[in-house]
Image (cartoon, rainbow, N blue to C red; front, side, top):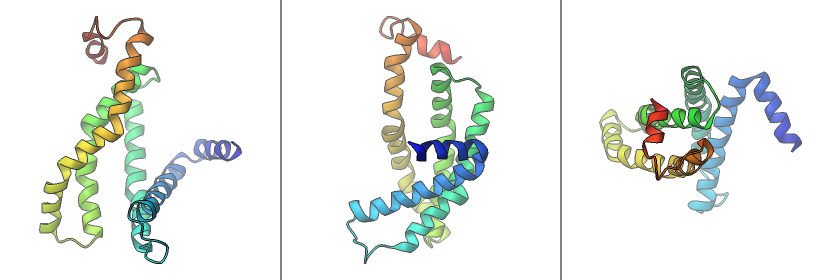
Length: 170
């Protein structure tokens, strides 16, 4: 609990730096988990360069881009209600996520040494699956939660008034 409070204080004092370092740390940790638990490489076969690349991507691209986007999103849609959060999520997933993935995937390909031609082919091949996976894994549970709880919180029924969600977003 003390560690979490220290993190929150650091985030309040230095939001940009902490977001960038957090993104790099999480991407590095994600790669370590992938190599050790999913790929079962073991410590001897761990690709340290790959982990460093992922950490660098987190600090140099993901953290600044996503952090900047969330600042824009908070200015564009001020507020902290459930409806505001749903609006932000829909704009994020409908507008930002497709663009972000379209930049992130070729950047990873370039860092992995792919030629422009191979990188373009890989993007065309992987982009649809990456975007669908992003929606399915990252946002569908959250969206389902909002669609289930939002009408209850607003005092209406989603089944009796399906236009409620759409009308609140206009």
